[in-house]
Image (cartoon, rainbow, N blue to C red; front, side):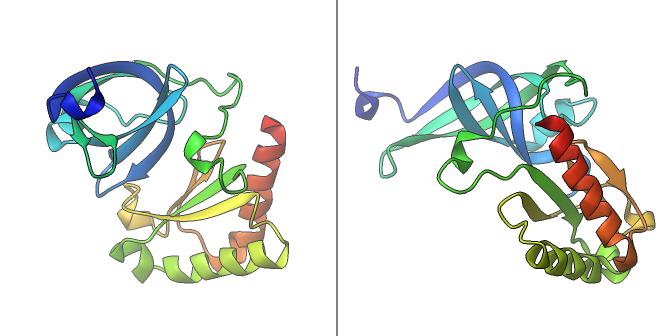
Amino acid sequence: MTLASLPRIQRFSLTGRVTDLETADGPYPKVIFVSAQTETYRIKLSKLARKSLRQAPGLGDILRIEGEREYQREKARFRYKADLVQILSKHLPDEPSLLPSPRNISSPVQLGKILICQKSNCCRRGGQAVWEHFEQLIQAQGLEEQILLKATGCLGECKRGPALVILPGKSRHTQVTPGQVPQLLASCQTQVVARL
């Protein structure tokens, strides 16, 4: 049976490790990237799937995911949407670091990420200024290929913003000021070196 002759919408079930997250409003991600059997899948979480979670998944967690996949003939690929997500095991900090996601292979590998909330509460409390300071310092130090600056939705710290998360160590910071940016960037670099 060829892909073109498959039913357009099918059920799927897979178990794999989280390699990346795209956050939305609230504590749960809207999209997760899961590595399973040498492939990485981009899976959108339905509202039902987000409600089925008791805690937010993190990088390196092992998940069991069920839902529907739709074959897009014009793009010759599947689009995945989950309606059930279960965390089978949480990633422990002393486990080996994850390999970069295959979707990033065509561009330079980003070794560290700084996720900065850009929702209205954090922006009102100085989130945009913190973003700009990070951007300037990363450029000035030539770290564009090692550290990715990424805008996110709410990180659940609205009253203590601006909020950010530094990966790979998953360290969370609140009430960040532009004056703290050099120290936080150094912390990101230290976490990257510790993982190498």
